[in-house]
Length: 272
Image (cartoon, rainbow, N blue to C red; front, side, top):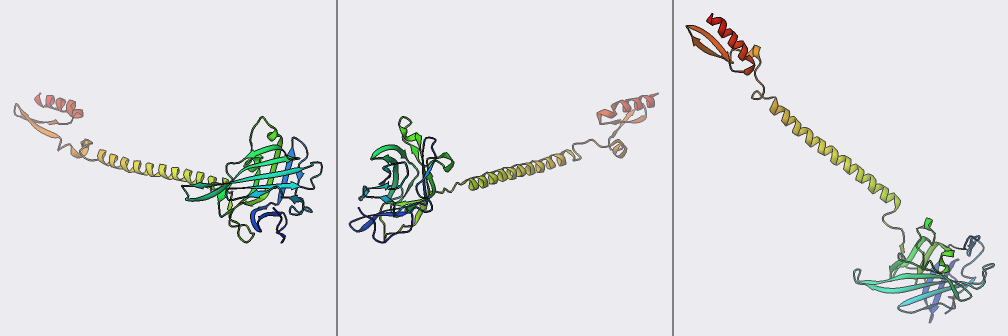
């Protein structure tokens, strides 16, 4: 396993096997911290990742790829290395092969100090994977999860900024089209969906009220019809009377209950 003879861009590493590139790795910054100590930036402005790591322990084949970055200049950390394990899998649903970053390990003098597992770092076999932040910190969505609370993994924090990796089907020594880690349900999109839902609820309520108002109009029209309300006394008195004949006198009886007393009194006066 050797470095490519033609130098790639700064902070980019590639691993070759039999003269062909089998792993590509690029990053802008690598920051690690142990316990509450000051964080260590492994890729500062004057530091070329390409010139200061050894990838001799890396290996790759058709089923999996392992990238091991052994840092040569890291201050008080001696024999510090990072190991990335990529595994290929076939998914029937997509009818193609995908690869997944199965784990990231921190090693000191070939001894594993921390292991971080992943579940959301994957891409189609012919793509590279890119993410602005791959980190164990919650403020960066914690794509790296400590493998166990019982070991020392939780004592370490690691963050990769502008992270990109590809472990299979590399052509011309360059990254393929990148599958980005940003999801379709970003906070801005979720807020837009929530606002749309609120507007739909308001519109549905308005339509419901409009339909309700129309039904009330029909209700009032029915109650305001002539068949519902009794006729007024002044205008329809003549239509509400029936002639009564008795003792040669003629009187009238009103049909409406509210006029019964008046009709009886009139009939009594006529009789007298």
